[in-house]
Amino acid sequence: MSEVFEGYERQYCELSANLSKKCTASGALNGEKKKQKLSEIKAGLEDAEALIRKMDLEARSLQPNVKAVLLAKLREYKSDLNNLKSEVKRIASGNLNPAARDELLESGMVDALTASADQRSRLMTTTERLNQSSDRIKDSRRTMLETEELGVSILEDLHSQRQSLLHANNTLHGVDDNIGKSKRILTNMSTRMSRNKWIVGIIISLLIIAIIVILYFKLAK
Image (cartoon, rainbow, N blue to C red):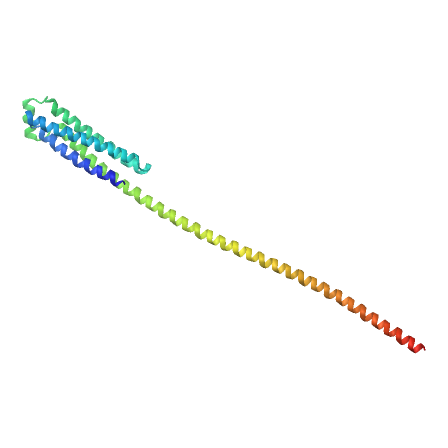
């Protein structure tokens, strides 16, 4: 929830309650006092309208989920302001006859003021429900952020494990290549040993034949 909006909201609620009291008081006045009180009320209504415009601008500048909650509040405040304006018009019209004015003084209220009080009570109840909804939205958003952070942490762990597996795979490939090279070297050594054996065998055979030939010629003489 926007702190700026809440500040305007508090100012409006205080101003609305004050204007309602002034409307009740002005209903029992006459002459210049009544005109002066009505002038004060009209000035207060202008201030209330200015506050509602400020709240509207602030609400529309926020995120969509918060904006929807605040605009619902604004509709209630605008309805309350319209009721106050209607009360002022009724009081300013001066259509109350003496008997009705006496009844107003005895009862301390008129139907318009009673309706406004009921409207204001509903407004406060609605505001409380909207505040509760706003708190739930905040909790949901906080839970979503915590879940997002957890997801990011899990992804980072998975990425780290993937890197470890890739490193291990590369190491295994390196070991496999080394084993292949060693196998080729051993095969070449085995081939050379076999060839050397044949060469040594042939040399020995030639030496034996040469010795036999030499012995033969010596014995023949």
